Every structure is written in structure tokens, then in C-alpha cells.
Image 1 (cartoon, rainbow over the protein chains, first blue to last red):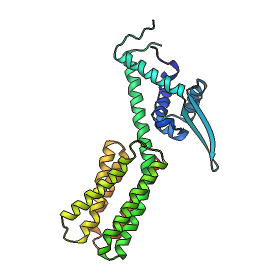
Image 2 (image 1 turned 60 degrees about the horizontal axis):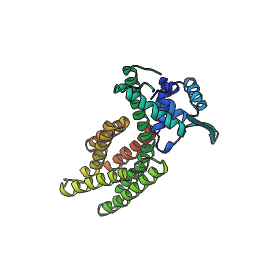
Image 3 (image 1 turned 180 degrees about the vertical axis):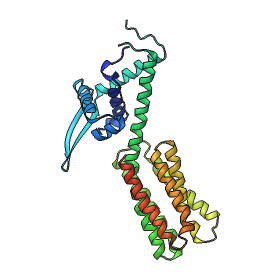
Image 4 (image 1 turned 90 degrees about the vertical axis):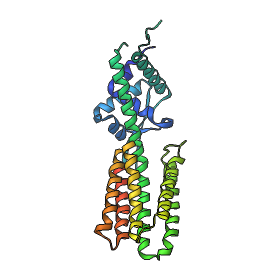
Length: 101
Length: 182
């Protein structure tokens, strides 16, 4: 078992945790994600892009009235990667041998 | 990748904190409109007590409470929160109403004033408990409701129903908006 370098970065870990916590993979608005992760606009935007490029997230942009809205959803691949990474972290904490065969 | 046990524990702790914060935000998003809806019901009910005869108060509040629980269920469905457990918030509302009705039935107050402030104190207490358990902002709203209801009986003994309409109506309405903004 090995960890995921892309997810392990602190802000990306928070983003994935916030999106993973949404039931049925509901999307989270950018502003809400910003509040939860306590990140700046620019920082959050760049990390969302990295996770989207890896196929872990889907970003949807639309308008509510005249107001632009950006929403992020975790993909099935993202959910699997996050679960694997959490399992890896737990195995490290519990002292399980994580060396690959 | 290779990380130390301390680093892994710290990452897991961050995940737990973020998950908790995410659930808290979602709770506020759902609780906000529910409080606004109950605020309207309170304002209508307490203003109604000012114009309707005492013997009709019970029926009026029964109708309004049923309407409030129904609105709460609609809001919960609309916001997609707690699908599998969607009966719990409605059951909690019914339990609070039943508790109020039962205590009012057994402990006869000397005048109508204690009857008027009692719901505000019970709901305020319930919100404080919810706030201490999960959503801190609810505790502030509950404490304000409890204190304002309690103070009303001494500060505004005449026209207490309109004071409670303001406490419940304006208070819950503003509280709901505050939760939505979280």
C-alpha cells in the first residue's frame, strides 16, 4: 500500500476531505469550499485545477441569474484515491508494514 | 511516498477537522431556512394570540405547529440533507412540542404570561444543546432566545405576546439568515 503524493498536500487533502464528506457526491460551491478549507481564492483555484487534471474532481461553471458559480464534485476515481490514501495513513499510524512487495 | 507516523497522524487529524467543519457548514445551510420558517410561524402565532380569544389559542398553535413540522420536512427534502435520517429533525420538533404541551398541562401557571414565554425558553434550551453538540451558532441563537423570552415577562408584562412575536419572529428570522451566511 502506498500514499498518494497528489492528495497528500495539506490543502488538497482538505479539499478532498470536504468533497468526500458530501453525501452522494453532491457538488460544493467554490465559496463554501473556501470557507471550509480556509484557503485564499488563488490558492484554492490552483489546487482544484491540479486535482481536476488528475481526474479526481470535476469542476462545473454556470450562472445563477447573473452571478457566476463554480462547483466541484469528487469523481469515483477521486473517491477511490482518497479512501486508499486514508487507508495508507491509518496503516502508517498503526505501524503496519507499508512496504510494497 | 514515505511519511512518518507523526505526519500521518497529523494528516488524519486534518481530515477529521475538515470533515467536521464540512458537516457543520452543511448543517447551517439546512438549519437556516428552517429557522426562518419557524420565525414566520412564531410571529403569526403570537400576533394571533393578541387578536384571538384565549379558548382558540390551543387550536391555532396546533395548526401552526403541524404547518411548521411540514415546512421543516419540505426544506429537509429540498436541501437533500440527512436523507436516510430525515425523520429525526421532524421527530425532534414533535418531541419538543409534545414536551411543552405536557409540562404546560401538568404545571398550571398562575397567569397566561408564563405560558407565553415557556416555548421560547424550551426552544432556546434545545438550540443551546444542538449548538454545544454540533453547530456553535445555534447555541448563540438559543441563548439569545432563552434570555429574551425570560426577560420579556419582567420587562414587557403587558403586550408580552407581541414581544414574543418579535423574539421568535425577528429573532429566528435573523438567526436563520446568520446561519445561511456561515
